[in-house]
Length: 90
Length: 211
Image (cartoon, rainbow over all chains, first blue to last red; front, side):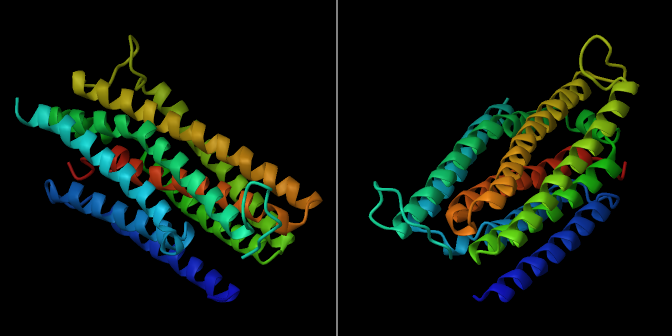
């Protein structure tokens, strides 16, 4: 990708991030029950993915970087899952 | 891609570039473990005291939170443009992006300070002075997490601002090619701090808004 295309992609990613922020904020005033939380977290994951791909260049990452990232996310999931296993089964 | 001559322990500039990036990603993985337990604590509190967390979250300053999200997302774009400029060996463009991001970081902290001052006046600081109407144990736990998570985030943001400012100053004296790797990994750190906020924002500010 040449320089101006990289810049354009970054600006487009920022526009998408702002649109997602508007969506998550406005949806908070609709009563969707636990759907609000699911929608908010879904949008947060989409924003994190945009930042990861367009600003942190995860697409160009080497296998070692991908492994370090996935291992961290996996371990966080294990910790969160084990923590929840306690409170959900009381 | 700007590749300056490698340090002697690296076979080539490309190998050094990969090692530098891997090092920062591994550090960010440990940072995730640092923030992780707070998110885990939040998850448990939210499950055990769903109504109290919703009631407490309604009292956060959603205008400040939303504005700060916009400020941080924009600062990340500035950093991404700065990294891209430095890799094109455009030191001026790199400095501009880094200073813009540093100023946006300052704006974030100023908004946060205004917000904390309001929280303090409303008696939302956990402890003997905590006085939220109809408060239960769950609401105080929410505010304990709110201050711990936003405080730890603000500390990381402050460190990030110092890093960006140092490299903005260094770009004046040193050629952009020599700083490509350093600016790139400082940028990775800044984006990580942004991602943490992206998750903090809905969890702290948007729960129970419709109630």
